Image (cartoon, rainbow, N blue to C red; front, side, top):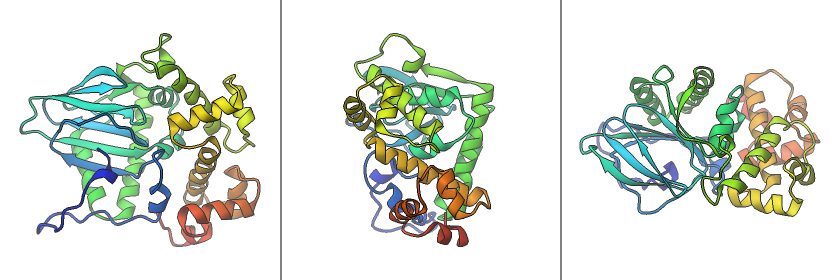
Length: 306
């Protein structure tokens, strides 16, 4: 289950941590299935009634026992005390639990667009986008850090939550350097199709990679389709089916993510940020930014609204 699926209780017991304060980008993640909001949950492991998908890179940590998944129609077992990561846009379902009566599960939900914006991940991005399931090394992450992240997220402090997201990026960069264990190979790393959805997802992975790597350049649907040798109409339909968002809207979204990063990470003038993020004009940039975040880029920067 994802953060959006949690039903809040009518009241809050004394001493329980407050629910996270709604962020300024809440509306940015409020509609559609392509990208979900950032979240962290701690709960008792449970069996899922049916497979589902959502717009995150999902992380699972079991403090004990093991969990049986069906991942895109195939079996997968996840063990304890290692952080497992996968693209939750691939259908997945927990179907069995072993030895978890007194244990708990920690899940992290990283928005897919935030993951794609992370630099210097190389083959790690391809592996997860290609349907691979990986297990991170103990050198990259441990339970103590996960518990601290959960506490930061539950604090209700948006700055602490953003710090967690930054540390997740650092964790991924470390994994990209030291390596990881593969629980399920990515389709991009395996010539034979693992399932009936493997081939089309491969095309989408390549389109996504082309968009992210060339986000500052003009990007037309025809050009993107040409990179994978598909007819533009077929490429558009395939992309929308897999990503739950059109190619055009995906391009705009990744440009907005890039612009938001530049606002906070540089002193670049807003006018220059528009072009560095790939927008063809300042008018277009302001229009999309206000619609996405409910404020101007200058207002977000001046008030350090995360």
